[in-house]
Amino acid sequence: MKIVALCPTYNCPVELGYLIACFEHQDYENRHLLVLDDANQLTNQEGDRWKLVSHLFRYPTLGQKRNVLAKLAIEFWPDTEAFALWDSDDLYLSHALSASVDALRKAPWSRPSVVLHPAKHGLQPHRTASESDPGNKLFQGGWSYSRKAFDGVGGYPSMDTGEDQALAARFAQAGVTDADPIALGHDPFYIFNNPRTPQEAARHLSCLGKGGYARLGRVAAPPSNLRVVLPPHIDIRRPTILPGVKPRIF
Image (cartoon, rainbow, N blue to C red; front, top):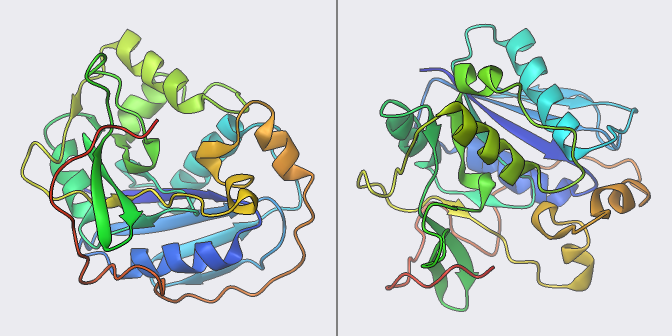
């Protein structure tokens, strides 16, 4: 199964370099990564199975930007069978795509029940659903889905934020089933990088809030160089996973 990780980015070149390094260390072979920079901050470039496309045009909503990513992926790799959602402000362990593909062989939507958050002495597992609503698993940065399922519901609605829950609703209405890679025996693989400062929170895709995507687009994004290196603050090759699974943080 060929899977393409889709990564929207805006004005976080350092974090993007970490994410691409995570991709290069994946243990699943039949993969590609497509990054869309609509800040025109970085030059068009590519590396080992990844490609970065830089656009001067700022897409009006995050939903539209994610749809454009999927469309471009098919243009570059017509035999694409599945998409993984990778956000440039988060990180992924080396088995992220192999675990996702394993789940996608069972159902058209891979949705993990546990994600990781950086903690003082390692990575702390957290559930993606609350006890009161176990079917509502958040953290779409760990999701993957088949191309057929995505096309079948028309992709994302044109929304500033909340496009993840809107897509989930479309999947539910269409009867798209999901599989949990954690329940299949895989360790958690998606690291939700908790913003450490107000400045980081203001540009973290999961923390934008109402109107946040539009505000982000008004922030100056000076030309920058991309440096692909592993993150210095988290060892994605030999991670320390803390015991116990905590409740969902939000």
